[in-house]
Length: 286
Image (cartoon, rainbow, N blue to C red):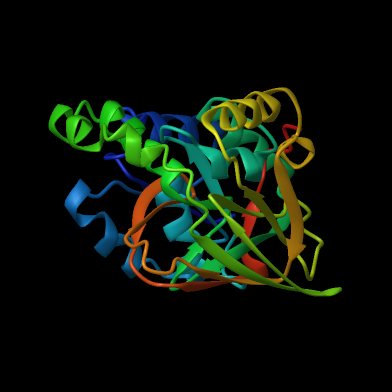
């Protein structure tokens, strides 16, 4: 089995000697592996030059953004990806492996198991996501989290505009296309999650809308979401869809998160379900 490993040393929890640790483990196991550990500024260029046909599996050690970029590179017919947790949230890694463990366990179990699974995704405009996206002014709180994570005090103070973050205006309009027909709605915050059912060929987007009228209702929704599956929480509406069109009216830029990464959107967009976007080797931790 030919393995190639790509390490993003700029990711949140990849150790400085990650390449050396990985090389030692591969030698211990007797698994030949070509290891690439580019300088942080060279990572995108290195990823673009990887030949998907030159390996049987691609190990990617980094955060959610790193793994998502690699999955987009290899696509639905390329070598399976083995993601190793190296970011802050590692949401995509949990989805692939069925849970979280140390990077050694994820790697060893995935290689020994060697079961290829298709990974669904969603196209959000020109971006591809594998876990989910959130839209609305409440998601601007993610920018505060990111500033704290990076210890960026200037950015923290600029983002600490709580009256705007807690603006409960229902300024998001959406139209759903699904097997049973179409539906329309409005929301303060809209969440779109890629299904965890990898066999689902249509209606693979779980769409959750929330329209709290007061901060008390918002707090209630938050507590319900902690205690119950989000789709069962009071104060939200759940849909399944194959495609969704989202409009922000004149309330732009609109804060959003794509697979946990904060962004600002300046135009309306369409979100489409892709039942097969990449292939993965998971550790089968669930």
